[in-house]
Image 1: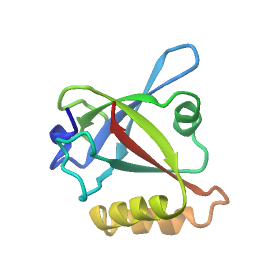
Image 2: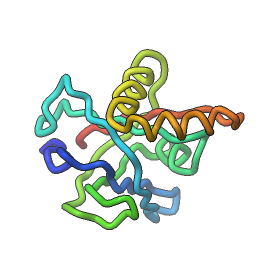
Image 3: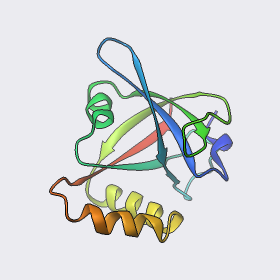
Image 4: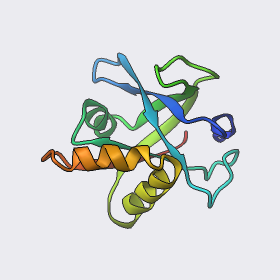
Length: 130
């Protein structure tokens, strides 16, 4: 199925799941890896967050997520897609940050500057089709 519906969008609504099974929806920035077509099963979307947020804890507990294109307030603009998320580190995390920096220049750099005063690190995760 892939992620073709996300082409041209700035935000995706990420639904992660609590241990109880309840979903938590959050609008986030994302960047697609250009090495794979968005409509292929090899598609990858990178997302980052500051620190160890609730969404990171939920992803570590349960990699199943649902995503949909949305506006900055989280209003869904397309169909929900089943996917899997995984926290990444090292070179893959650096690649994800590079893609995000390029897509959201200069806004991400400004946010990164202010976040640098925080002791919380950054966590990168990759979302793949289920």
